[in-house]
Length: 201
Image (cartoon, rainbow, N blue to C red; front, side, top):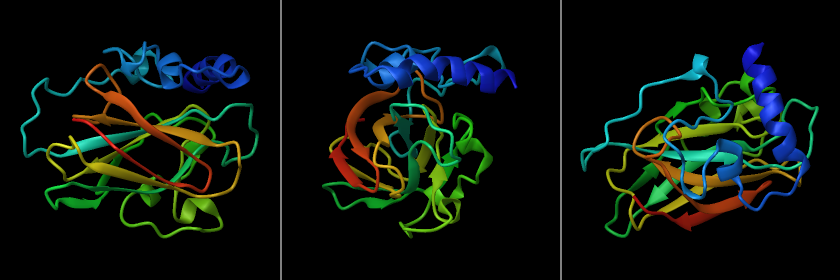
C-alpha cells in the first residue's frame, strides 16, 4: 500500500505536466546518468545493493525501459507494454532479452506477469499480458542481455500498440537496478513502435 501511494504521489506531477527532463525528473537525476540512490517509486523498503562498480567485460548487461507516458490512466495497461528487447553489435554479437528484473514496475502494470518482455517479439496480442510486460505509468523494467559491452551496439525495443500516448526511454545499466551506474537515455519510443538506437556502455 505504501509503495502504491508513493508511486502515485511521484507520478502525478510528472504525469500532469510536460517535462522535457524525462526520467531524470521522474527518478531524481539531472540527465545523462541516474543518481546513485534513485529507483522508480523510491522508498527505503525498495533499497537493493548496487552492482559492482567494475563490471567484467564478458558479463551480461541490463537494458532499462522507463515509462514516460504523460497523463493519468485508469485502465490496467496504462503505460508502456514491452514485448521484446534485442541488441545487435558491429562485431556480430546479438541476441534477445534473457532475464528480467521487474521490481520497479508500478501499479497497475505490476499486477501482470513480466515474462513477456524476454525472448523474441511475439506481439501483437490480446490480452496484452500474454506477450508483453505492462510497466504502469512511470514504471520501469530492466531486461538482461548476454552482451558483454554494449558500446556501439544497437538496441531495439518492441512495444505493443494499445494507447497512442504511451512513451518510453531506454537506458543501459551494468546491474539490475536503475542507479548512478546507468547511462542514457539513449533513445525513446512510443506506442506500437519498434524503436531502435545506438547505445553506449
